[in-house]
Structures are given as C-alpha cells and as structure tokens.
Length: 423
Image (cartoon, rainbow, N blue to C red):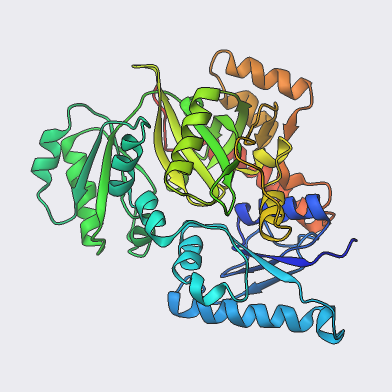
C-alpha cells in the first residue's frame, strides 16, 4: 500500500461512515480511522478501517473536544513518523457523518483546527441552513422554490397555525433537528405526515411536552411516491467555488416512520437548469464543503421544490463517487494537496449509475413508476448497479455474513412498512 501524508478520521459508525471509508480506500488505498459512540454493523468487521474507537457521550459538547484532541495525539504517537526524526507528521483529515457531529466540528473549529483539517461552512451559515425558519426565506431570496410553508413556535397557540393551513395532508418536522433529538419521547418520528388539524394539534402537544422549544415546520405535502423525490450532491472548495454538482432521482427511501428521508436507492439523472440553480445558490451565500440537497418534484406546477440542504454528504451521496467523482478525493485534493478547480470549471456530472443499498429484488418489486421501472430493469441488465456495502476492497467474511442477514430482513421491512406514499 502506498504511503500517504494524511490520515482520514471519520466521526460516526453508520452507513455514511462506511461510504466515506470506502471512498478513501478506493481512491488512495488508505484505511481511515473511525471514532464513534457505539458499534454498528455497517463498519463492524470491516477490513478497510484501520481502527475503531468508541467514546461514551461523544455527542456531548463537553466530551467531544477533549476526545478529539486526545484522539489526534494518540494517532500521531502511534504513527511511524513519531519514531523517525525529520519525517513529517501526517495531516489528520476530519469528516463528520451526522448533523450533530458536523455541528460540533463547526462550533468548536477554533479548538480543533490546530490538529485537524476539515472543510465546513461558518457557524452563522450553518444556522442559516439548518434552522428551517431561517433557511426557507434565504432559499426563496435566491430564487429556489419551496413548498407552501408555515412556521410554528412552540408555546404559541395551535389554532392560529391550523387556520392558516389550506389543505391536507401536511408534513411536520422540527426546525432544529439537533435540538429535537435531544428531547426524546415515545413515538418520536423524523417526519410526520398529518391529515387534519386535530392530528397537527396532537403532534405539536407531544413535541411540546418533550421539552423541545424550537420551531416546527409545517409544509404542504407534495403528492407522489418516492420517485418524486430528488437529490443533489455538491462540493465547494475552501475558496468557495463549486467543483462538481450531480443530480439524482430517488427510487426508494426507508419506509419505517423513524427513518423517512433516508434514501436506499437513487438513479442518476441530469438537469442543467436545476443543478445550476443549486450551485449558484451555494456560491452566492459563501458556502464551503460537501452539501446535499433534498428536493421534491411537484407535478401540480411542474416545479422542483427544495426541502432542505444537509451541511455534509448524505448517507446516499456515495452515488457521486460511483459516477467518478470520489467524495474523499475532493477533500484530499483541496485540504491536503492544495489543488482546486479554477472558476468556471465546475463539473456538471452526467454519468449513468444506479446506486442501491437494498437488494435488487426490492427494487424490482417496489419501484413501480412507469418509465422509471423500465430504467431500473435496463440498468440491472447493463450491470450499472452499484452497492457500496459490497465494496470489493473489503474482504471481511464476517461482514459479508452480516450483509446477507441484512438483505433478508429488508423483505420484511418493506412488507411491513407503516409509511404509505399516496400518489
């Protein structure tokens, strides 16, 4: 294996963490180090991960910084450079895999940047994008379309909110997802689809009782099954210039209520107009780093409407790597090799690939939209299907056994799904 002058450090042990580990290994033959709270099957047993370290309460701000600083020192002490005077120490390239870990990196950047290299936007911009009642006006200001939206502050009367809703069903979600998940309660869901004012009132009351004091976002539910959802991944370098933008149509998402919004299959598409809008928006606001947009196509007015933007790669963003735009590679070229594209050199990706983390029989059974189903069948025949969980560089037999069990369980998961998508 070639020697490199950097070590990737991935925070998290989930699917997103494995995708990034596979991207680093595929591009550079290097095994990242992983630090997280608990052991998860996605990264367990893997042969492409150099080490996995567990820290209780890693997501606690008081624990996070000391743990990351101690971890950096440990990695450097154990590296061969520590015993070879004159040999440069490797740079530590830090990658978060969840909203909360990314927020902790950004909020504590001044205490981490002497030990790690990373590319994320400022805390001010993070809040403008992640706090939904700030994001939606910002998006509209820059010409992006959004669903009809109502913002409710916990503590205000619900009657005024429901009187403003003109049609049902609606989607309800927290304005601040990090704060929302700090206040656990039975039946807590990532996103709620509600069919009446009574249901809205009941859910608002439960969330209020949990202790959450942020805002709630209530939006018109755009009709359509999973294939009406779209996705886009971008990388903006440390100079604030977009280096690539792609576009994909979601085929399936997780159908458990607690996991809605987690995409399990995406087929790559190309729409220069929408891709340009997203690129121009991020460049205009001074964004840097990886970004992932969630979008839904509204057939009622033939418009792509932005639902949110993640200030990181998404759990399904690996399809960009499958298209030839390795996510890890962009970080390394920018942060380690100091190489960036010049203005006007952004790549608008148009490479056909079908990304999936579910078995192909799930795709054949549950992707039923006319035209899209035909594309899925064609790409299966043409062997353009890519599943990063079966990355060939990972030779763990135990991990393959875990994946086999996981594949069998997906049949039951989709059959018993509680989240129906009316067209």
